[in-house]
Structures are given as structure tokens and as C-alpha cells.
Image 1 (cartoon, rainbow, N blue to C red):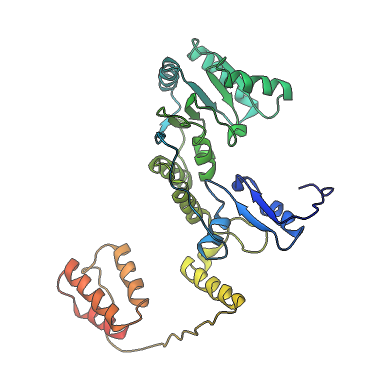
Image 2 (image 1 turned 90 degrees about the vertical axis):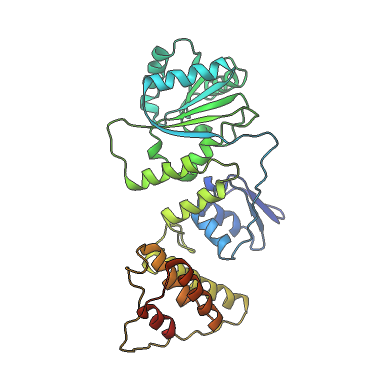
Length: 346
């Protein structure tokens, strides 16, 4: 990425761990040559990259088959509790495994390490973080790989590229402060062998979490199946928005026009650029003095009502209306007059 590097004949760019690179980085490399084929690899692509794939600006391939004998990692959200931590560390040591304890503040990492030493004196423990001297950090990591220590107290430097099949328990302190894709990447550091792995998402005992943080932890806890990275990336896209297509912003303002309309506009623009014909759709404004709606007495759930309003606006033939009518009658009984009027208008 530095200015003094020039390529002789660049034809293919492969970006691994794509979620680690910013837009500026990727655009900088692309500017070197216009016709560079790019392959980006990631378990959890950033929202903008995923959105570009979903709307057809990029091709998307999903590898869904996990390695043989691999088991899903169990994830638990729990309060920071000394007894729970002690039991989990000892049970991992007893089965010959190792533990990551992730605390992402260098200022207080040694205090946490001392607390763990007092809590679990039986465990061999070392600290690893990015501000350590190079040889010291390397020594710590080599000791961990050689099973000379049981617990590695570390920061997010282990987020990618670490593969230790013996490490199968992980604690993430203050898990509410991490992003979705980051939590997923961190959880992927354990469970890399045939053993069952456990990931404890620790939250402060006396603090109310923000709605977004609660949502992130819920998504991570629920999506534990192997290959669920794409589902987590979808949730991330919903939570953060898809970002600007041009410019550096990673999270955008799609909610200003709504995701559906945004995709429609984007699809039209892409087809125009590709030279395909774009059909002009006219939306006539029909004003008839009759009651035309789906009453809440007929369908009480607002989400189901909205889904039927959307289905009715998307119809393209009389057959679609008949199908919706049969569906409504089958699920909710006799159709009231306002709904019949609405279907007639549509």
C-alpha cells in the first residue's frame, strides 16, 4: 500500500480478510491499473462489499461446507463472574486444552491478568498485546503454540491468522463494545479441531446495554451453525446500512429512501450502465371514494399486514391477485369488504 511500490504487470488482486481493509486501501490498489481482476475473501464482508454482491455489481460465491468433523462453537452471553470464569478455565485445562482471554485495553490488561492469576492459580498465564516489544510478543505466542502456557490474556491482535487447534475456550471481555463481524472473527479463533469449543461473551454486571449492542450479542449467540458468517454479515448490513457506493463512508443513509427503493434505483442505474433496456414504470394515482385497506381487526399483526400491502403493490398479473385472495381466505377466514376493495384497486 505504500507509494514507493510499483507493479510490473498487475493482473489479479486477492484480498484476504477483506473486513480488515478500508475503502481507501482497496481503491489505492485498484488505481494502479484499471483492469485488475479482484477476488476478496472474508467470513464476514463489510456491509458495502456484501451489498455490492447482492445488487449484482460483484459476483458472490459462498463456501458452506465446513472441514470434516468440525463442531459448531457454543456461545454464551454472561455477566463477568469470577466463579464462572474459574470453572470454564479449569474444565478446559482438564481436557488438555488452552484458553484465550480477550481484554481489549492495554492500560488495564495486566490488572485483569493479575485478577485471573488470583482466581485460577493452577493456570499458567501470559499476556500478549500489540504494544509489547517484538521479540517478547513473539516469545509469548510461541509459548502458547507449544502449550507452555494455558491462558493467553490478549487484545484483538488474535482476530485473524491465528490457528491453534488446542485453544477451545474463549472469553471476550466487554463483548458489547465489539462489532458483529469482529465478534464472529474472534469466535472463529476457537473450535478449529474436532473438539467442542466454547465462547463466553462477558458483559459488565451493573450496566444497561444499548439496543444495538444487545442485538449484536443476540445475533452472535443465535447464529452458531458452521458457515453462518453470511447470515451474520446480512444482520450487519441491516444494522449499519450499506454505505456510500462512492466515497469512503462504510455505513450509509439508506433509511432515508428505504432499502427496497434504494435497490430499485441502483438496479436501474446498473442496467443503464450495462446498456440493457430499462422499463419505465408509471404509477397512476387512483382516487376512489371507497374504503380500501387491510383492517387490524382482520390481520392484527402489523408485520403480516405490511407484508400483504407489499405483496399487493408487487403484483404483475390477475393470477397474483387470485393467489393472494386464496391465501388470505385460507389463513384469516372470510375477506372483509375493505380488503376486497383494495385488491380491486390494485
